Length: 252
Length: 252
DNA sequence: CGAGAAGTTGACGAACCTCAAACGATGTGG
DNA sequence: CCACATCGTTTGAGGTTCGTCAACTTCTCG
Image (cartoon, rainbow over all chains, first blue to last red; front, top):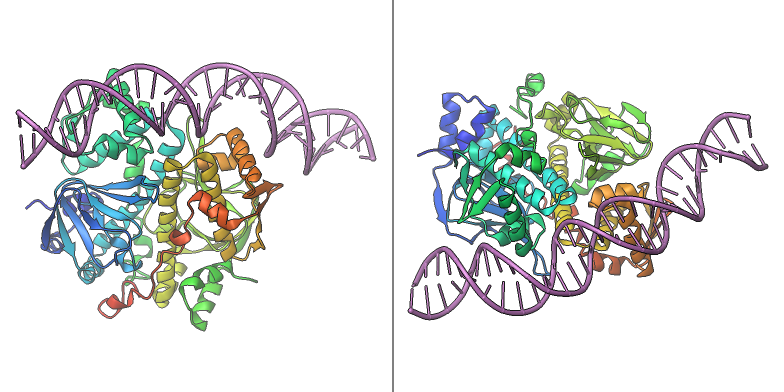
């Protein structure tokens, strides 16, 4: 089977054959979870790490007011629950948006793999930096942009991330989010999301319809959104080697 | 001298005498930086770690539109540039809001300390989880709350964080931010910040004046803001031990 | 075919921004 | 010590963006 984790992390590789095998052996323990069910819930004891193999999930939190906020999306290859090593409890939910297949990884196995294969540890660390960078970008999005720009920015981000895992065909991709989901992500009502989507469509930028996104003019869309994909890559690599020799045990 | 780093991390301790000494020896290389100057700038090569000993800084980014967004505040005891181990460049600025004293730590020295003293490594990891939790909380703040609630929430967060490092006297603390800074944090114009501050004052919740915050009714303020300080603590501890024996080298 | 969920549209009001002006504190040079 | 400039704060008027409420339509799936 195609290993989404491997293709994702290999962006930060390259990995040796042995490392690839190690990654493959991490994701043997698969299970399916169904649409709109919880992978974790706020307050759950953090005890496991899950790798998304297929499907679409989100990190979110429900508020006492009845509102819901989405903090991020988990696509194939992404990892949930890396904070198991430190935190005792989850401080947000992880919800399956579509039916998903995830691989359950025992924390001990993951640690052993990281120890044996330093470049895997590094690639994982990198992932968490990207998650943080995405949070900052979302803050910019929420604070400074209008609703249509916000929406355009989110659609750009998802396109770039889905492209990485081979889920964009031409200029079209599947987006299993309702307008309510989009609103809960962008701090908008579903009604206003609807209107903003229409504006993007009438501007000839992008059409969202029937669970699919049709990008008409990616360059104009990115410009409109103020989208710069640098934050999704966090340029830089091969940097760690400087400290490798002096402290082989910790990082590598 | 009082070691802000130590008092901060000791929340996650306790530390042995040896560990305390290790922390003290990390912060010997002090330097002063002046108000409104850059500790790092976006694009700088990430090559050093800095511990804030006194003063007030922020992570921020300037946009081409002329707008500015603040992503977080660095108070005494906080650490800047921990991503040096992975990222090659900074993807945001770190700006001194007041005159500051920071300690420059060589990454190698920090790694060595983390290797020798596992509970220090753990406490640092914890810090970065809190930074991430704060980002999520700010997203909720921006997406779901009105301007006066946002402001109240930020004032609550800063009060709790400053309390930890002994910078709150009674129900008053120094806040060296302009209304423009507050606006750049909360996605508001300084004008609207001004009006919202007046509302908070007239509601008898809190007064911000002359660089000082006077909290009149902390419980009502927290309720008004929907503030729950759990995210600043991230409950959980002693959790790591489960994997310690099998993989002493990586984490501990 | 029917029922529930999701999407669409319009009218109205609230929250927030823009522009403009004035006021107050602070620091500097004469 | 005062005159002045600068920076931050405060207030008002009017416009834009977005939320609320309500009705209606279209999809989806049993």
